[in-house]
View 1 (tube, one colour):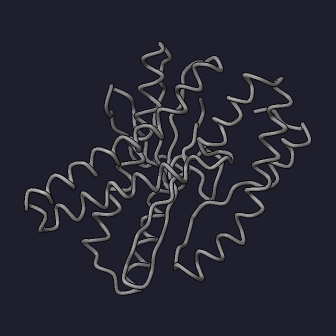
View 2 (cartoon, one colour; view 1 turned 120 degrees about the vertical axis):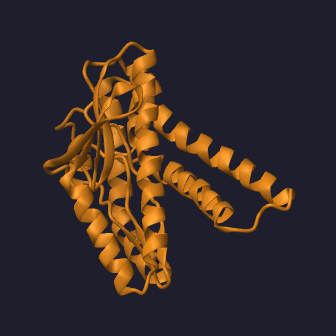
Length: 257
């Protein structure tokens, strides 16, 4: 599973007048950022190796520079960055856990400037892939539900003042945004992959690929005016661009994924 996704989320970084939205959970060669050289490795949960790509460092520097130039608070930005890449990692752990419970070995999890991906060490069946792909977004939806319930309990018991509650609520909101964004029916997001896998239950593989490509092509074309609208009206800079060429080739049956 060289790169489910994802992963992609739309998380919002806000610094007074500037909002930045890095995206999480893309396949290695999809989206704006590729992995680049691996600059750091460590062993994470379940003993799965985690690798940090060079483009992640580039993205962090870009966001810090833009935020500070807009008068943002460095501490606030650091906390939000930790939240965003933390929820992306947990998202990828969801994919990894779904692999492990089905007896599928996981080679590594990679976090990079485009988000991240969970790489399988062996091939999964389409039915296994459905569960693997779905578990990433399910983790984010569960985190949103847990943090929302916890925040509500804190406020109802008169404990809602302070930064902790504010950041807990923000973490839940970011997970919800990640879930919604990542379920859009375009590759390499999980929504596009789930659409393709579900269509294969009812249609031949080639037909399901063409239908997925056609729907993704419409979304990819509309993406650009949507980006402009978000920037002009909301100050959002979304660092993800789905491939028009890939979806067009899928629609024509020239590529199989």
